[in-house]
Image 1: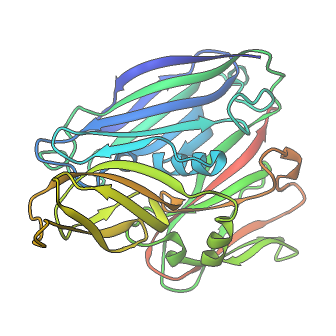
Image 2 (image 1 turned 45 degrees about the vertical axis):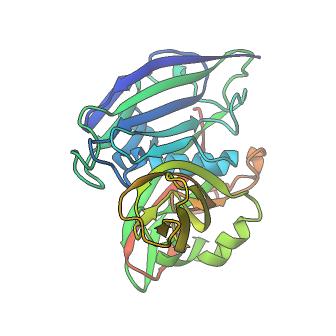
Image 3 (image 1 turned 90 degrees about the vertical axis):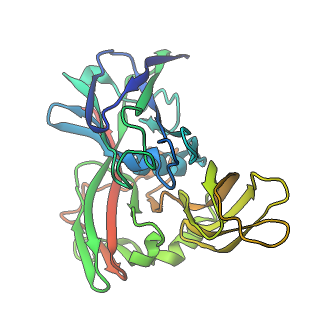
Length: 368
């Protein structure tokens, strides 16, 4: 087989708030699309504000047919679970710094899958759509993003020679979202059009793990005639860590003593950091659920009250506050969950705390 990487756009400008539409007008077998997002901080700082916050939706459509629809955070988490490695994320919080978030949208079981890929010849007008919203965390300005600084570079990972006729591709979508209550069950009707590869719960609520919002999850077919999953969420999450290694993210923080710092790996996290001033001592007061209390003192024990750059690395589970449930073995499509024999498939989530919850589904979509 022969492969090539075509950079379709280099640092294409994105709107502060809006949607960029890009035609996918080539016909080669498409194994993946790589997206490299970046933005520039204002003249003071840009704390706890990532490109994955402001890139709110990534879509691939063909007219009214939606082939992929995810936020950047959801897409990053799904990539992490599939590859076992977090996409490149490296944000800087100081004045004029750069925030970078990347993702690879994989259409097969792995990169360069010669059987499962996106065959663009099967569609009449495929397009990539990227939606941005600059003020999800805070408005643009001196302590936010610099207006007009959002950019994306787009790379097509193409199989130039040797691919078989495409059998199918991985369709990934957010299929449902709701605001969880403190009790009661949320019943969700899942689609029954294509086999399930995996299901992911996620939340954008900072400071709370996803399992704190949803205490139990159950998949029920035809009123419990078959129940492929019924588990307490936290217990499942701990079990799943036997299958995946912890994920790592880097950052250049700009902080002083006593600040709460957020980061994109949530469950059971760990932090290492190097203070920007020689002799300063860096510790943490507490650390959980994708955030920690920063304690920064000088060598005399006095609190540091002026921000300084801290070189940081975070390690933990639950990328972008998510929980992933695989159906079968990724390398064996025959093992995926077949939906054709059921008249009804429900996801039943036991609610435990208030907050937004989103449901994503990975399906193996065959070509007609």
